Length: 395
Image (cartoon, rainbow, N blue to C red; front, side):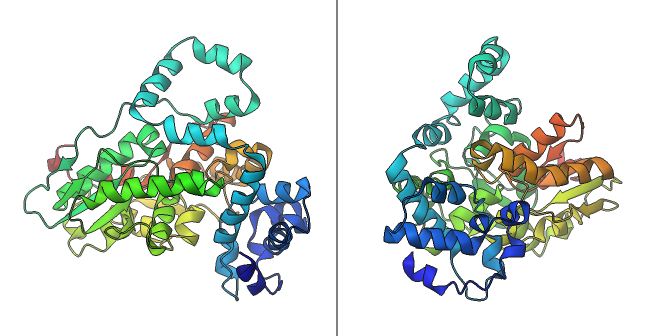
């Protein structure tokens, strides 16, 4: 961590790209200010709670990395520092338990029962602020999206991929997962959805729990290594970016990690699918993890543009939406302030749908629209693609 910190020359080119610095104009909320705090904490020269305050207010959006002329690996430094802070406080134990267990099959059944019973009203009344916040973010919990492991290609088999469904996506993105499987199989791709796959580990790593992250990474390595795959596809860019970096670091020795639309647009025969035309207006949000970690921000736009007549308007870049994994729970005031300009733009534009490629962003944007009384659906680009598949596909 200290060697990386030494690479930072404090030039300040990252400052205009940092959403929290743009919001507060506080040097402690800037990348170079936080790097100085990381150095001081690692060297033991400060033990101020205020240092932890500024570091925990970081979104981890990694926009600063794309602007840095010195190539400072800010994200890795932040994770190492949060591990140090976790060792000192242990405050994330409950949140890590929730991220690990709430989205398992038994957790899904409990959550569905909770949402349909009087317990929800009681819990909202007596629960703490963070619990009520989590409850507001959760859409109606759906049944499990996938009960099979193998989905054969329609017609001639042209490839085989694994589909990473993760934890939160498996809970909230049933339609996106099913749409991805349908689209891939129509393109001649056999889809494998390993039952033993687990959470990607991003929440644990970014909270400082490197041990749990390593365990989950190994679990997923074993789950996908059972199959000979051309690629492992992700639908949530937060998961995809995390898995990609675990692979680049050597701990996830599997088939290449690719974002769904990235893989689709690399298929030479993708245009063989004669999508039904539509005049729907789509406002497309680009998640930070898709832009700054997976580095394929244009692929969802290109994929949606395969649909004749569709009108796609990129959501103007006002900075991070504020979702950022558990940030919307840990830093609700900052998260809502960061989201506010996007909600205003959506309200002004009035699209038919808002589309985003990350589950956390979708939850946060959807909650903001509901709070503002705006009834515009927030969907995954894959859902839009699946709706416009040829009629003969049987959708």
